[in-house]
Amino acid sequence: MLKLSQVNIYKIDDNKQQELLKELSKKFEMVSTKEIVKQVKQVNENKLSFEFTLYLYKPNEEKDVSWNWILNEFNQEILKNTPNCRGILLIEIEDRMYAVTFGFSYFVVDKFCNRNFAFKFARKIEYDGVKTTVLTSPSSQKNKTINTYLNYNNLEFDSGESFSKIKAKVKIDEGFSLYNESIEIGNSLKFSITEPLLDKIAELIIHIENIIANKKDIVKIPVFSKVVDEELIKKLDTDLENKIAEEDYPLNFSEVDIFGVNEIFNHNDGNFTLRYRGNEEEIDELTKEQLKKFAEKYEYDLNTILLDIKVVNYKEGNPVRTDTLKCYIEYTDDEERCILVKGEWYKYNDDYLSYLSASLSEIPVEYSPEFNFIKLEHKKFLDEKYQKEKDYKCYKDLTEKQTRNKIANNYYAEKYYNIMLSEKYGFKLYDRKTEKVGNDKIELMDSYKDKTMFAVKIGKSSGKLCYVVDQSQQAVVSYKHNLVDHMPEIDKVALWIILDRKNKLNIKDGKPDINELDMLLLKNKIDYWKKEVRQLGFKPIIYLNYVINDI
Image (cartoon, rainbow, N blue to C red; front, side, top):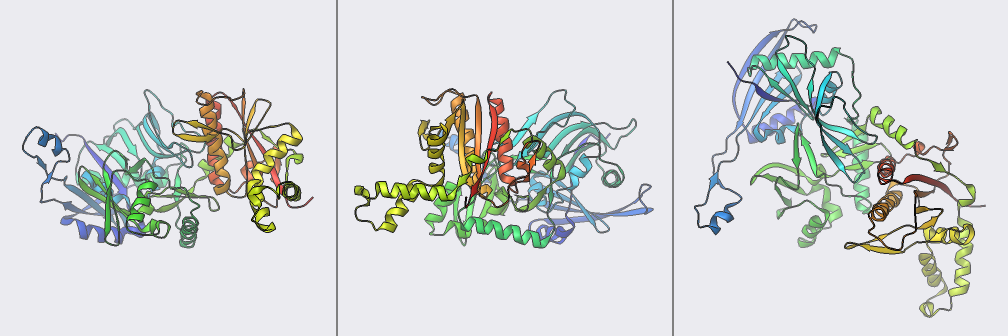
């Protein structure tokens, strides 16, 4: 009797089939090919021809184990091990291609896969117990969240989250014996099949294709769908390069990546080598600081070479993955509502956006025209400060223009705005007051009134406005855990956003509709901030105003 065997199956992206074949010819040995013809009742064709090709990577060298140092300490003989063998079963059916991976070969196949395939299947099946989920939270401090459950049947997720992996039990019909009820879903589908035979692999593919083609969606699963429009991809790449050139970008390296259905903890499971034009450096952790050191050591402009730096990832001392740094960056393009994951662009699907929109609609939004930022009033304020301060010693050797510029820098827009709130409306000024928390200094808030702490920011893009969300979140956590002194009592936490834009947001249900903002990165951050503030026991609120160019 044949024992149960796990099968990890990928569908290969139609546009990447030749790339995969080229990669296999370089790194693997083609062993043999077999053909199986199956009768198919569920599709128009009477018969399908399956061509199975086995590829193997068989290392012929032994390497020292990575912990030999402890053997040296005890004068023991050095141990060696053989790197893991890897196998890939390639399956070709007319114009379609699938792959089943063995060992660490999922690192090779994953980059060529159709990333929508597994979750298309996942939406069409019934679940009978959820074991593990991995959720991606773009722009939040969590990045990815791994949840494990006991006796739980729902696919639980919150706004601003999309699924990267599901491990669950599914309902199967009585008498069904192709695979058992435990499956894993990620970039691939992992089944426990009852008979590990090529014939059964063919039946499994027929079964998967039939469900995807003929069954209706049963559950909503927010995920990212791949961008295929070449012009849009070029635009997204160009926009990212421009952001990097301007140093206006966050470098977010995911702590956890999903390869097929495998969780890879980037900072725990191995180490890295950085390579660029013949120079290389070994590092234990992939961070912006390490990249800066690498660039400085070899006298490179980091912003110029960033996306082209090669990163070799090692597991158990063996190289398993080599990619450009672009494949490690997670970045959101606001304008096109796309996210960069593993070097490729994906769009937020409708499920994701609808849940995010509903969540943001829960936040109270206040708009009072008297709080708009009037540019002419700011100019008048600067003129008054110039007349009052121009004879100060610090301006003694400066021209009038230089003096005015220094005063303008000192009383920048947000500082003036907070002073204005203090002088005209009775807010308490906290701008630029910092407290030390651990080794860091944090700005607690910009203004305070009526048991509400305010973080204030003026801007027109996510890049400018996201800072205020991070500032507020850090401050409220520090306040809640009594990490700062001299703080007044609060029960509300407010973001005060002054939009620099021509058109005002429409009013919906008596308040400005922040869902109209074309700033997905900002909206994701606000959504996460809202949840964090509520969990800490405070009420989140947004004050919204506008920059007015004239009276």
